[in-house]
Length: 247
Image (cartoon, rainbow, N blue to C red; front, side, top):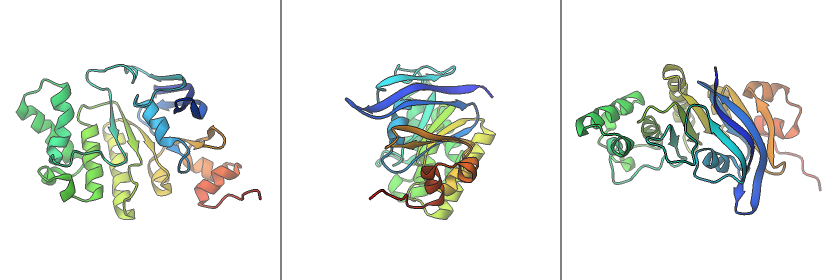
């Protein structure tokens, strides 16, 4: 598998405030890559930087065979699932999924509808195509957001806390969907999460961020980190233990 994403010496933050620096990692084509860490460590800021919503303070983000995120792309070459799903509340699920097709393609209306319905069918929501987001469950809204991220058949997807706020059964169903997408569509998925069951269920590789350290403190397969890392911060994360604090 070749690289689809290369990050080198990346510094992220806001204005003059550097949150994390010297961030470097590769994402291979077809894998599920997780960005881990505690609340407030910079996971979502890193994701926003990778997709071009947040300018980097230094370093580079390079997509192999894909235009850089800071340049306008026609159409965009990656899809995004935001933590809140970011669906338009007054639009049906079908209309939400159809939006990227309407904006970035010249397909006729009936073809747009057919493709959008196919994406909803892929995530198990075809019967709910004409429902509003408020008329379906939180897990179904996440699925609709995934369907929209797939609308243009992008080679890489970015998910921000996909299972956050979901009950264990719904979260497990979403994990199964993510695995199915990665396997059947050969799509690369980069996801931000701190949900341990999801990490072990879907991620091939991961990096762990730490705000106090100002960067990456661990990288590798989740199970390897959980079983073999000697870093107390890594062990505390995977064991759900409180770190001992100096008085």
